[in-house]
Image (cartoon, rainbow, N blue to C red; front, side, top):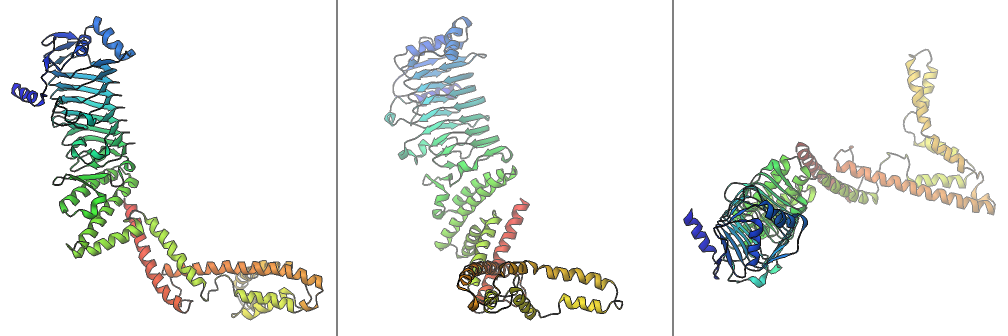
Length: 578
């Protein structure tokens, strides 16, 4: 163990030599410890110092500073804590302290620390310690953070912090390790809880693709990992990390990618806000080129291994959503997943590597267009409605024979009004004569006459059954006859009317003419839609009541209808099963 500590210390030695502190190998209070750090004028190592809580000194010196606040305390030089031993029961609580140079903690035990409203102008490094917990609250880490090979029993928490990189410190020979980092956290020992909440990670845009400046929480084990409400202007690297219990992320804004190669979570306890990680933010790292690859690069991914790695990242989240019954998020994740697959298949086919993939690609395109890969059956119905109305518009301008509502056409109805104005007959007389001509089968009146003539010769139920139906037959003509009675106010022929009556008749029947045209136009539209719906749904009613070119279009519409309704049925069943 001593050799390991010696090697670690040697690796972390800066070019400048650290001097010993005046309290090395001594036991001091927390207040004294902080005062000695503030007095340092050059690089200083505090080694084998025992820090204990003494009520008379620390009640005022430490507790008052933390609870009530105090003027800003400046620590000017680089500070390194090595093999220090802290109180078992009391915490190191530091508030409103600015570290103008590096601050590092090595091989100390047991650390129970709270940093609040502190500023680290250079870097904060924590290596090889035995830690109970560390809470870093409302602090500014202006040149990154590194946390490696520590044994944490409870938690590490960042809240309301601002973490950035200061390019002016690049190449600083006083650094405690070889290169600057934005945020590097590695834990290969026992799992602990990591919470990063309401923090800002700010990285200059030109450094965004440099793996050295990723937010690295990779190759680690955690009990719980919470990444909540953060503003992230950098790439988050979670590759080869395992979260045993709960992985939680929501309300975070990711302006970079989220690298998730071999990221392992517990699906049941994973809580992800899909809207914060969608739109191809999920990514992997190509170890050969050190390039981050996401769904946006799917059409240029040529390696099957890279494609499978990227898809497995989506499968992680998809399985988590499904196991929790979150169908909406699962569908959204699946759609993005299949979009990546479609782009990959297109690239593989276009490159000539595998021509057999063309039909797989084509099927993906169809499913994306018509039902979002089976996740949205209503989209198929929406497209079906557009198709149905399109063909209905074609049928509207071509003649066909449908008598679903009216027994006569628009022109026949206009002829009724014309006969009325050109003859001395009333509207009701003209209507009755026309109805008589239109009847092709024996009327209910004939049936009633038969029953009356056969009274006593046929069973009673012939009379009871026939009479109500006859009344219903008469009832359907009542509205039309009532309308005719209202407008039947000109018994004379048009040419025999006075000038004033002609003007009134012109206005009145002009209105009737327009209403009739609009009414029949509406009925014609409904008939066109009914015909299109009938053809689209392939219900059929024998002979197709349309001629000419549109007759062939009905075959095309029937095929499209069969296709869309089949897709709708399959996707609907898929969603019901889920």
